[in-house]
Image 1 (cartoon, rainbow, N blue to C red):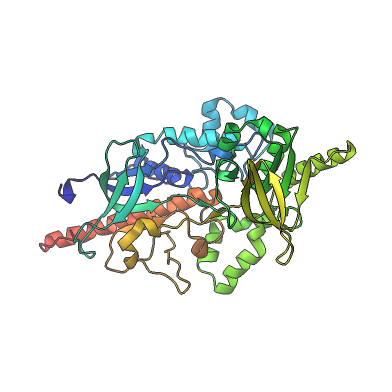
Image 2: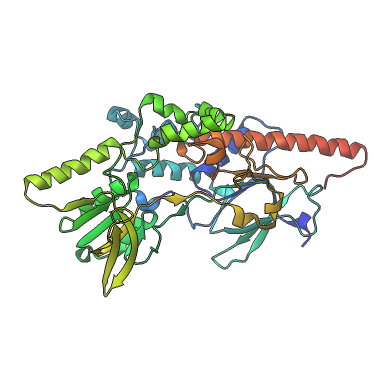
Length: 448
């Protein structure tokens, strides 16, 4: 088939989590404003249905950001896709207001995301795994105005190739496990927690351990303690107890849209100060109410003369090995300390994620992408990869830009504004290229 006969879109999104969902809405609302020409778009998601951290939708777990930091409000407060619009459509707006809480449960926020995606689902192809993004065979980058997106269909309906004038990559984070540890039926990453927990027999979970010092680790320990009243629960923490997340007003300004400019255009010294002073707003920290919940449970156990929850501070996992039907965790307290062993029925690794890395998808396009002195992608302020002048198509990142855009580059806090900036960039670049085509047509030229 000739490339010109393939499906062609102005925007193809790779991955459809909250970030590209927000972008889909931004493009929809651009059309609703009466744009002369619609921006054609398609989003490709490898999951069979929409889902956002489903395995961490623990009972009573709340969002760590205000409901106003939803998919749209900071970009368009009048949007019909806001969390408030969702509450109104669900008949719960008065009750939510009466609750007097800025932080909905994670389960309710997931309901909101599902409600929003259902309204744009006709632009999403689920069960579609993108395997590569490349230039057409033999194409001259200076003349090629589109990329080929190769898509595998796990359902066996046949692979396909789609043309895109712009690609927006938002494939999410990759789970990170302790060195020497791999996930299996008894060793779980937090990203698979609820699924693995529900498949296990609770009667066989008598000794469980959770490794990690952040919000997910603390929430899982609380959940296991409450759900398994017969079990011994261990918290393996590399620090001396949990550190509280700084969500005070001045510190929270680091997530304001304007802070992205301060970081992006700041000096190296200014950028380093962002991380030195403010990483405790998000990384390896726990909300104060969760910390107090855990300590209260520990104290109640002391009152009753039991000790079902035990914290192993300043301790790291050095590996895991099998001992018959048991899982034996190798623990090390300090770099020179003797390794001790802990037998458990399940080990949960709430050890975070690795940043999104699009290199594997880009393949040969990699040679057109510019990197900085540290080997990281250079990224424009509009989240577009800096490429050699000979590549005309736009490649945008929603994630993996902490080094260029700061702490909020992949977080929900700035999702509405970030998606709006990407949409604005795509629309402006299309207008520029349309003008280029018009000029060349007058002189008999063709950019294609």
